[in-house]
Image (cartoon, rainbow, N blue to C red; front, side, top):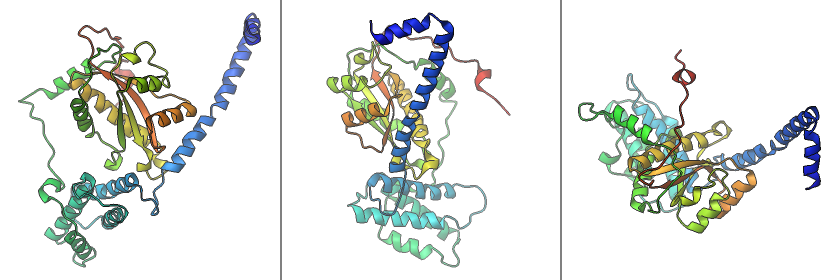
Length: 346
């Protein structure tokens, strides 16, 4: 037995001394581990900053979404029509031009079309309701749109909300059934999930809300057995079942889609929203899943980034084990808290 083990045994013989030792050790470790926050600060400082000099596509597209979404929101606001959004309209035009100077932009790109389509709708509103009598921005928009176009019908904004027809189906009941059917599964069959099915699940999940519609989430699906093994060795909650999952999804959020420290929590908020949609979409295809937390040391986080070839700006939100469950698969009952513990109506 080692000296350390012998010392522990000796201390445990005195409850008082052992209690003091244990509390002191715990507090020292808590203080020492505060250095983990320095890693977070460093990562956020490097990624969460927009500047004119930055030409990375993810940053330009995020800022473009951020700016033209302001126009989208303005176009659906209730009340009398008025001239609004001069700054975001000019920023949108400037960012499109910057993007085109940086690379050859595919005019079929959804973000490009969304930006141009929103500018067109904004211009139409101004002209149709004669909101710019002093020609503050009309000519600027007209000149810009003369050289930038998109399919007007496909990218016009706003569009009408889809109302669910309760006479056709009980959507509330169906959603309740889906939520109750979704459970964390830890037994998987060998049958892989088809790539087309996974693509459809991700496509549906992309409808999840995100801050200013910046859509910062990226999904990496790991199928290779050896890479899965290495990846799961970095995660501390998959012992005994992780190796059974045919696929591991890595949910990440691009921190460079956010402009500063006030948005420091958004990568995790947006990543969480997407992840919930993702596992529900999986279940709607009768695919089971188990969310695997990413509670790791900075060293482990760096190792996983290196293993997967992830950009440093990407934050790993969680891993998700994916696969088909055998017909008779036990799952934890996992009772939920009483509603009164959760809901507070003021």
